[in-house]
Length: 323
Image 1 (cartoon, one colour):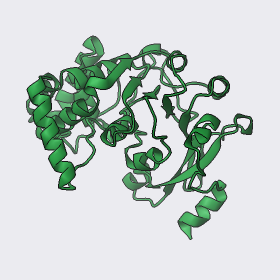
Image 2 (cartoon, rainbow, N blue to C red):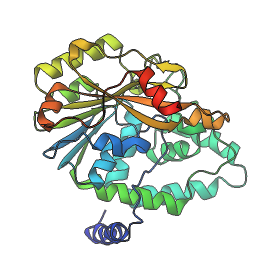
Image 3 (cartoon, helix red, strand yellow):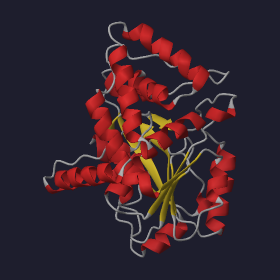
């Protein structure tokens, strides 16, 4: 992005903040994104974060929100899904070009959106072009990315919708590029490689997929980690006094997602009432989601204050939500 474009966008964003109509930009929907509860997560940020690191970044909702609030000097976005990180690189470094290419795809999809989606999906599986992935993410069902055992993108389109309109997509892409572009590094490696680079002045936010999620055999798209391997990595982080926040397990209605992290890690375990789940809304249900948030011992010590939200069991939290 040119210096003049960044200056113009800076003025627009500052005007929106002053007018209280500013909304945090998000360039694409992504299942599991923490966009809706990012403000709750930011409450547990220390005021001296040098680099915010997301080893499982996905849509990067927490980093975007933190950048909008000025809560870190630098950012590192990582995900083992290589094509996703190529898309992130385009968003941050060439937002205008990416927006133009998305706009062409959006207009070309009419009148047969269904046939066009499958054609672009086939092309993406051959080329991994970032603007093709952006179009697919804007069109797929519930923002839910799916790959076959051969590593091919195989999710279907939500044919009731055309995807985000080009003008809205451009605003979101340009906004994210402004917030993160000049102070963000991109990588596509195993999360343990990212953690090795973390210092005590940094903060790590981790949102691995729910336990039990199935992953493809093609490691270019492997975003998960076994429970035991994850716990082992957390023990190493504790040993090196790394500050981290984890979104890991939770409850939707009466259904639990995953196994609690062990007490041996000495984590501060909090709960966030995240509202009605997207799946419940889609099916006409009323199930509420309660998400777990874990704070590392080093972070609690670094905050130097009592964490405001009380620690409650899932049963106690259900009573508060549904009473």
